[in-house]
Image (cartoon, rainbow, N blue to C red; front, side, top):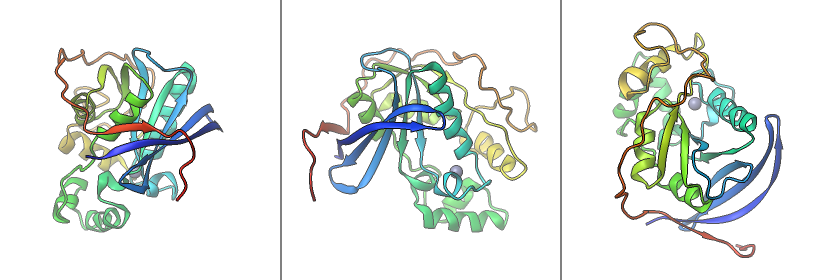
Length: 241
Ligand SMILES: [Zn+2]
């Protein structure tokens, strides 16, 4: 069982506004760090605006247009800043969990005409290796009672609920498609069950609808969420080494 420690935190002014950055370390591997970007006092709050975002080095650092990760990240931080309250959990699990090198190998396969799902399968990985247990552990550590989750991915909604976080509503989180990523976004809808931004449209690229109605998903009545698989301990003082 993995456990996390709240390792450090500080104020972090950003181009989107002021946040508090909180860094968590996986106890079993100190190189494995995850981040929460917190705005406002979210402790013991209901319906906290939340995004669980997975690292995308190619999109967020290198400016790749093969995906929409950077725009989704920016949109989430903007929305949280606009509400003046919320949290973005940033999981450092590149390429849906397969790592950077394998993600680029998958890109090479996609350039030969294989879609993103089949490329991962061809490399011997499941379509999506991400788990949300760490995100749930971080939200629990931040004392968040329930979230409005910004996502288009039903698996993420289910994953967080299964990990013990109450998702009270689903906030669609589409960004503008570009010529380079339109195919990728369509595959996410068709193969991975991501919710379409425009219902009834199978050819239109997802539209930018940051202010669309929030509650398209009713809360699940599930109360038996099982035991959290990931725990967080708060570090009292700086751990060296
Ligand atoms: Zn990406």
